[in-house]
Image (cartoon, rainbow, N blue to C red; front, side, top):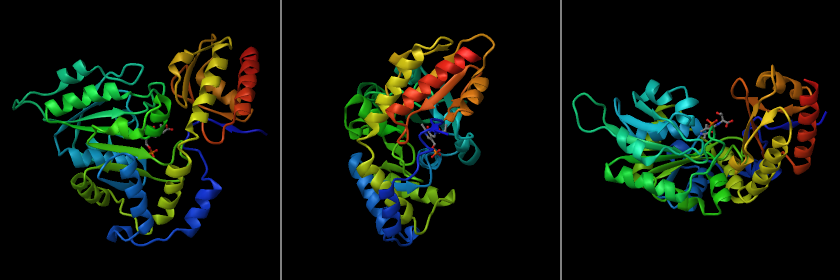
Length: 346
Ligand code: TLP
């Protein structure tokens, strides 16, 4: 059976060039700072994002957690979107492990939080209040239609952070998707951030790994926090080798994923019983709704799953499809045919 897996871009398999690089990787003990391949990946990503230093970690969740632990102490507050991955999908890890107080503000459908709302949420000095320390943005914004945040918006939030002496962290799990969609260098989207995390194991297809970037001083403290959450890895160059290939060979092709997502969105818009605004789709993430009476997202997903097409229901009537390295333009034609037939049947 033809399989088209669009549950996420995390399902991507390493390329043959990654497997070769992993096989041949020169390695050492990274807790001693002696893994040449990890060191090379860290230098490479720091340079690419215009930051002083970088730290290789096991996952996007660990990258965000380590960043939060490094910026905030117990009882400090961070401002973040109520749809952000860090608020929504990371088990409240920074509260559980770091005693960090989350102040969530509503995200707009484009992933932004109006700067005036952020400013209004910053705590004045008062014995009753926690201390605001950190503002978090997510780019692209996973739950907000995979939207990219542009440099102008990021600048307005960074200016606020500076004015109030706060830090700015960007969850850039899909930062290269944002840069591709906006036609700018990734570096320009994080120039004013104090820390940024990027994922190698999503659209870039590496099997494991994320990288946190910031100043030398920040990364030195983040390295201690990585160790305390159990993330000090030893001969991790085997993994970093795939990450190097991800950064050097897999960024330019993200435009193909965006094109396929656009084609999917246009096609879904013409299928009765589904609802989508194709204008909202500008990267590799496509959200749409089932509007046909008595049909739920779960039932639709089960039906098309039987025909080899995999997606995730993200609400009673909402679905998410994520184009990725393994999904071709002809797969999108197939997916649209299956959706069309299935909706006539159900
Ligand atoms: N997102 C996953 C799921 O957890 C929802 C996905 O399939 O999209 N930041 C952002 C913006 C993310 O989308 C994700 C993963 C993470 C962080 C966490 O990365 P991992 O899974 O490596 O811990």
